[in-house]
Length: 381
Image 1 (cartoon, rainbow, N blue to C red):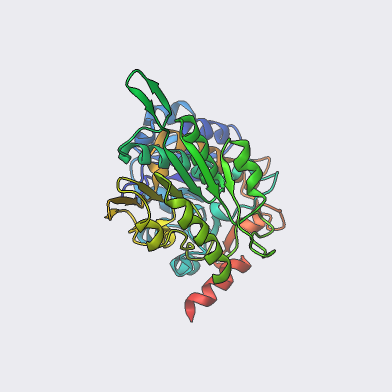
Image 2 (cartoon, rainbow, N blue to C red):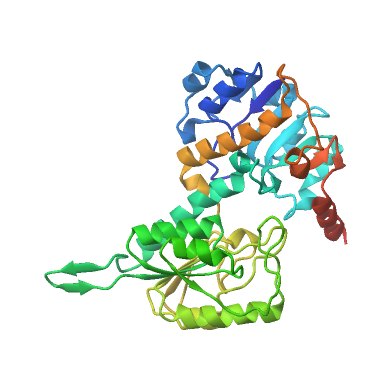
């Protein structure tokens, strides 16, 4: 079996799907690992590093794609790359099948078998494969550094000869992996941190990090699915949360938002009223820009100023920390790939496996995931 990794084509993408340490592990299983020259250079891995790990370096991208049994990628391959793959080839990566289901059409036509890393279930067995959590950890960390850089004040409490400097106050919206890492990072920098999440169960995690958990009575509404992800809420439930956020925004120097629902538009949490009530110089970092944003007035990939408040909506923050992002993602994807390899190094796909099955989007061109099938049906209307 031949595994291929090519240079990521998306603008600004610096991550590599496979790092030398993972390539070595796969090669030890009898798998051929072929890397396009330069694929790892922005993430700290040279061609020589891959060769030392037992991989082969290829300079002809098209030939590499045409001969691949499995293509590992960070982002969905471009159409011209998909066109080079043989019918029946396997693609594994972040593919956005719930957010952009129509983009799967060419993969269907090519009769590819496709696995989406974002669909890997949240289970004990799949923890080493949870790429969403790996990237969210980096995003949460980096979001606080962005905010600290733009905020015209320091985060920590300081006792100086010239007097006391009060600590910055940070409000984190969404206590998933990214939100929790943002809380931890802001606390390390010395800020006073509050957090809000629709899931009451998130309160324990927030408090364990030394932050105050803001709660609102949602009347017993179901706020998360069986996998622990937040679900889309009614307007009434969202309005209750927005009222609490608007009140606490008035005393916050920084707001970091990370609330997203898979396959849905991100919920609007920070209203125009909330932004207007913040002090000039305050900073909002909206991490949900790629799915519509949590903050009124935010623009994906841009920094906007409203009444002296800076609203940042960075995209692909994980790519700004390419070395560790690539290391984590490489470990995630190689751990998943090992479920598809038998003891002789050959490809063996078992859709009855409790990790492989849910992560499968297409099997030989046929839709294999109910959630993706529903998203395709909705997109076709």
